[in-house]
Image 1: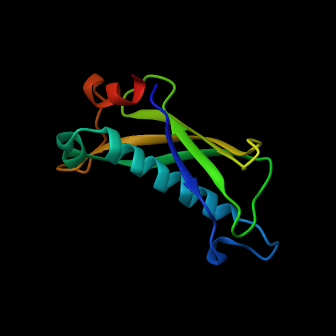
Image 2: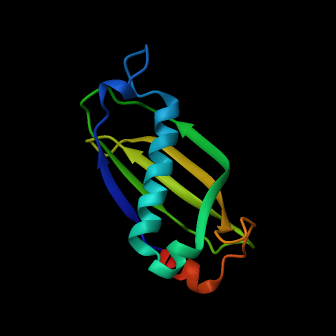
Length: 130
């Protein structure tokens, strides 16, 4: 499996009334990370032919960060797809390596031309499972 990693520093707009990153921001970061991974690894032909939509989120919040603190965001696809869907895993860790948020999200592949679900072919999945 190929892991994709980014460092994120929350801005003032990411912070809630409790003084830490809002839960909706973690979800936004997951989507942004998944899209960046797709754009970095998928072939140009696949990026033009398909797009992904989330069908499910399962998130465990174990900690948080405040404005200006840094998190390491990581995503990967651990298992082969099932039909049009696959599960993507996420892990967000603080500067000490402590895991703050872990998630599994289910994504469905959509054919850009028809707007319908498309079976994830081996050649589409391969770059993520290498």
